[in-house]
Structures are given as C-alpha cells and as structure tokens.
Image 1 (cartoon, rainbow, N blue to C red):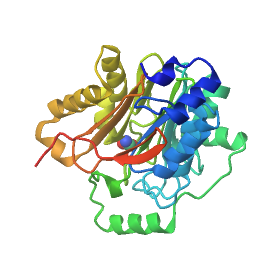
Image 2: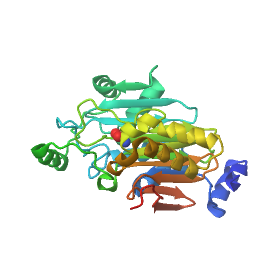
Image 3: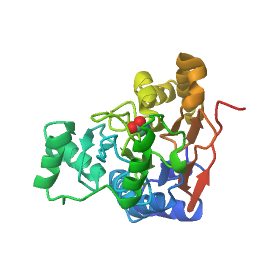
Length: 314
Ligand code: GLY
C-alpha cells in the first residue's frame, strides 16, 4: 500500500505528499495524449484540497477550450455536413455517471455532463435536448467551428474520402482519471469524435464502460482512438474488471487491446485504440495498437509525458 494511503489525518497526508512522494502517492492525474496544461490544472485543484471530480472536470475544460486541438471542444473537426458535435461523460467516486452526446454550440460538454449527473433524474442527454438543457443552465451558445477546422473540412469535401485518421495530430479524445488526497477516484472523457463522421454518429467517449469506467474500490480506465472498436469490446469496463481480478493496470490495458486485435486481424493496421488505467493504489498502465499514442501523468510533483508500449511493431 502506498505510504500516503496509510496516513490518517489531512496534515499527515499533506506532509507525506510533499516530503516522501513515492510511486503510487496521491494526488495523481493520468490523461490520454500530451496534455500537460490539462493535467496541471487537475493537479492544482487537488493539491488545493479539491476533489478528483472537480479535478477531472477542470482538467478536461482546459482542452475543450483549446481551439488548436482539432479533436476536442472548440476547433474540433466537424462531421461531413460541417457541424461540430461533441460527446462527453464524467463519473464520480460513488459510481454516478452523466453524459451528453451530439451536443452542439456549447464550449464545455464535460460540465454539462456533470450537471446531467448531479441535477437530473437521467444519465445521458442527446442533441437538441442536451443543448436546451445546457442553455437553460446558464451555458452560452458558442460557434465551435473555427476558421482552421472549416478550411480543413472544405478541403476534405473535395474528395470526401472517409478514413479514420490514426493519432490525429498526436491528439484525440481526452480521457482523464484522477485520485485525490482522500484516495477517491473520478474520471472524465471529452471529444468531438471522428473527423467527417456521418451526421448523428456517436463514439465510445460518452458511453459508460466503453470510453470511461470508474470503480472507486478498484480503479479506472479510459480510451482514445476508434470508438466503434472500443464500444464493441466495452474496453474501459473490461480493464477495470480485469484489475478487480488481480491484473495490474498495464496487464489489463494490454488484454483489452488484445481483444480488439483478435477480433480484427489485419484490419488493425488501419486504426488506433489506446487505453490508460489507474488502480486504487495509484499504479498506472497504458497500451496502444500503434506507435504514436502518448499519455501524461502528474504524480509526485512531476508532470510528464509517457510513451507506452504498443502491439503492432513493424
Ligand atoms: N474515441 C472517440 C470517438 O471515436 O469518437
């Protein structure tokens, strides 16, 4: 057990975190891709005594507001009709879940997902209903299609050839998992989905068990890459269940990728899936199908990009 997990009082916990940072100590944030500003925000929230739920919400918001990222929030590449549609979900340590799918014109789908979780009798709102709920709750209407993304879409329309892009600009869905100073786990996941997808398409990211799963007794996992394949194998739930059975986060991520590989044979050369996971002790793991997937961990006062192992070696 991590030294921090043995600490009893808040004072002891803080002292341990600052003086005896050891692998597995809390807080910890792990996120898909190289998103150090986002993990830094989440870390700061928890270092100031905030919960893992506040941390993942505020961490995801950093990437949603980043107009240069073309796979999350504002600046996301649109569907084939030119509409930017966003998917997000969030889970708290109690195992509660909230999500929005096919949400348009709202900057922070992760925050709308949290409101769905905390303030409605439902868990998932879609499309116009989700937008109406957001507007009624004080979110502003925003044009999410930036000039850069509009230009890219107009160029795409010339050939209209649809092919999922592997490791889109080394940035894809942002999945974030956090354990706070109390040892409680939350997770969030946010995306604009596949570029030039069919109108109405929803991927894995907002779907509990696929793009994200949190079990505060065991750990959490989240996914990036081709959502259709993550959905078919319920990847994040699978990873958490494998950890429950005793696998390490690394072994569990590898097994979840192997399930996709087994189902798809040669097809795996055409798409990427990457998983990250953390267990209750604060051990982390990550694995992808292809090279190019990276993730960020903020732990022991260090905010660092990591390059995971991957299945398809050339
Ligand atoms: N993983 C994001 C998506 O497929 O929509």
